[in-house]
Image (cartoon, rainbow, N blue to C red; front, side, top):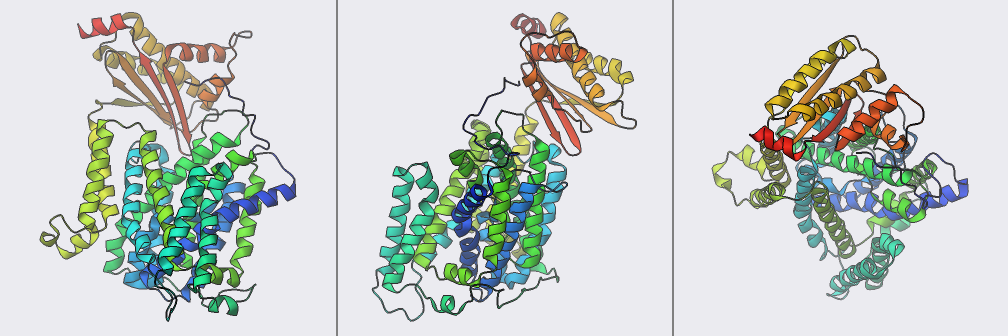
Length: 586
């Protein structure tokens, strides 16, 4: 049910307002400084773990920064169906590290590009049908897969802690001391620093670790000294593998699952950014969320075509807005421009590649720790009950068991074993299947389609009456159920107009105590939750719309109106009086 609007006094500049250009550039640079390590170090770490020629790192970093800059601008500016129209910085996705390493080990950057580009198409399908998928790919499934990604990547971070440059002749414990100092500094800043210091903690830790590593001789500055300040990478585009061999098809399911989970993360960021960017509380605009997911998909497609790791939205954007109170989309435009400028500096790319293994290992460790924590938080957003615990536990241990080749590995055909050896793939499939099983026990939903016309109203009311009586609703309570359905249907017809050839799907589920009704149809213009928030406490004059809204508000325990491109879902929950529930059971 929509609540009265909350005023957010901490916002200095809302999303559609314009702070001074100098302030915008400074805040854009601040956010870039926070996310730069994630954008550049993540692909470099993946390349090193896969044993790819270090010279390819220049191109991979160039491509990652270029795409991150372009997609950050697109998210902020919003062009057609692409972009949220809010400040959502884009950067390399840590979720793809494990599957990307496997792809590069099998076929180098060309195979990685083919897999990333192909799997990105799933994201467009997911976004287009987001309204339908919203009940299948839920936070429990997404959070479970994210935790599995963290579990599969963590050994990579540990393996980097002991790496040393070739021909290193310094103290044997230099790597241990460097990684320990980096780790402790990040931990202390995370625990004892204020909100701003916590944001900067990983960056400060990496810088301090690099200073100590340079003292021990663990950093090789040869490529940095030879690189130009401005220019393009010496190593060009790696190409894309279009042979689509067995490795491609075996690895594609894993990439598709991570892509959908990445889309789910962007889905969450698209919701969160709206909650912190407006002066007054507003219902979530799911068309904005779709725009964010579409831009994410476009970024992944370009990442594949250019031969780098996929990107995603960075939640850092939300944290920075919380701290500064500046949510203007102008920040994203400047930030994207700064990322594009950095992409043309081989010197910066070479410096980042000089970061030694002990420091990079600690960074990836904290990245994965935060990823694991994000997965847990995502699960908890949907509530954590017995069913969610079973889904999470079974899927997590199934993924770990198959990845460790501990579950009938020798009894499976080689190609099946190779597919299921990816714990994230196995655990993700398990989570989806278990989630579907749980949804089946919620009770059968009865649905029927009606033409989106006023002439269909009597049939709609007869359908609701029939199903309500079957569930045990009687008398005034049954009339309330019909009246709520009538007002909701009329609201949609008045809002959309009679749509020739269009239909409304009315579904009803429940029992003698609680009933949920959903009306799904073509997209409308106005959100009923927003109208309910604007409704004054007392009627001002008479209007049919005012009466209709007040009836719905008084009858329904909860109203949720989710509007997507291509679908509009108006859901209502009604509870019967206790005496009606008793008579229904009798």
